Image (cartoon, one colour):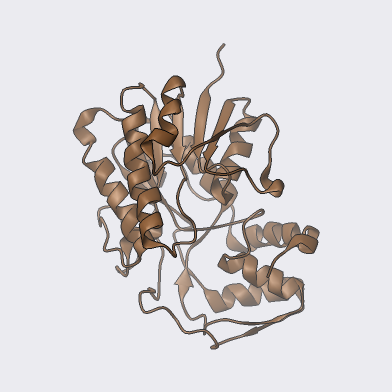
Length: 305
């Protein structure tokens, strides 16, 4: 029996790395596409690492020589500082991937979207609300979503997954929860906002299982699907939960101003994921944060704060 072949675009990133690990355990033939080599902490054996820039079609035209069953697009410029690079990698990159694979008869193309596509719309956020993105990152992701949705009549088997805030082991310290955890482990006093915002946090293992549920699933083709816990947690409460587990360090609340484009409350309606993917999150915040803290404690010697 032939192994299933899957390409994870952006396989060197946090989400991509966990997807690679998961499908490797299923004994699939797993490929990663990225501009550069993975961080040494995220190097995996038996992964076929390919290199190319999705924002430049000529850079990835070699992919036409491969026959993948599934594509998951996690690719994109992660810092969101450069407007041009962010737009190129998230929007132009998505278009280029479509043009490469449009006639390759793949079974499923999963586009990883973002909760940022909704902007400051009122929660619970539903997929029928296409979005009013405010940030360049959200706008770039939303343009990619609109592009794919325009292909509905072209028989291209895409699904757009909109994850809410993902967290877990191996995440970079420039994200909220890893920054808080690493600062507390190091017994630092760290500046933060008043942290009155409410956010939906989804543990990475649950997110990976949602992607698996998309593959070969014709019920979701042509649709947007939110994935998250489906409820929000105040950031200050999240910090307090972490601080009680670590028992050192101190947040300095109110020292960082909120961004003007930042919504106060964000959480999704996940009925569509339950209906079409037969998926719901299994790991609550308190369970997931213990797993995450344990990872960062074991690797505190390499943490960069």
